[in-house]
Length: 128
Image (cartoon, rainbow, N blue to C red; front, top):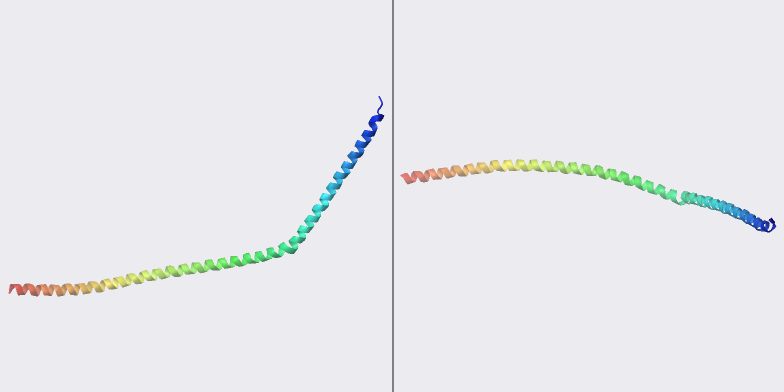
């Protein structure tokens, strides 16, 4: 059997396979180079742009936390002040109510006494 006619296509296939392998290796190397360039660019971008912005945001966040804490403290103080004021108003209202009740009872007692005197006078006059 003569293999000579098959040797040329086999050589062509071998050369094409080697070229494909070299092409794949080249694509892999180019991909790695592109990846390393992109990563370097991203690190530089982060150092130049993102890091200063991040510091500013962290500073603002710290300020907001401080303000929130102060507002919370002030709210608590106002709440205690309002509660104390309401308690004092209730106490004052109770004292005024008790004082007024006492005065009204005294006036009512005087009126009842005057009424009783008038009724007694009218009753004694009608018997006379």
